[in-house]
Amino acid sequence: MQDQARITSGSPSLLTVQAAEDIEFLVKESEVLTGQAGRTFVIAGADWLAYRVHWHPIGLKVERLDVEGRVLSTQHLLPWEFLGHSLIEALAVGQLFTPPVGRIG
Image (cartoon, rainbow, N blue to C red; front, side, top):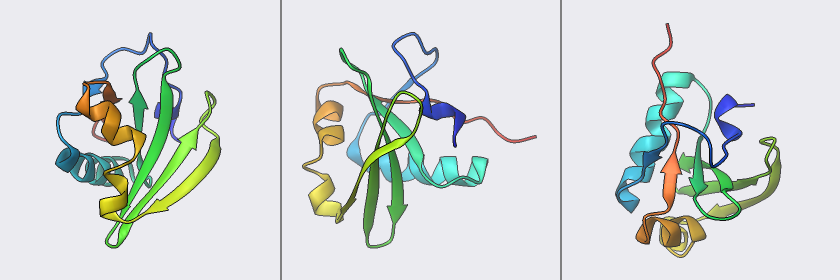
C-alpha cells in the first residue's frame, strides 16, 4: 500500500493539479519514481476524498480509497468518460491535489 494514500487536510506539501492533461503525466511520474502502480489524488473539501488513478493505454482505473488507503470501489473508464468524473469536476474549481513524489535513493 502506498504511504501517500493517507491524506488529510493537515497533510503538508500537496501539489495543485492544474489541468486534466497533467493527470496522465503525474500518474506516470509516480509509477516511474516509486515503482508502484497509480497515484493518489485528493479532492479538498469537508471529506477530503482520496482516489488512486492508474493510467492504461485504453483508459483509466480509478479507485476510491478510505482513510486507511483501502479500496472502497473501482471504476474502469475510457478517457472521455473520465472527463465526467468528480476528480475533473474538482480540478475545474481548484480543489484537486496530489502529494509530491520524491526520488528513490
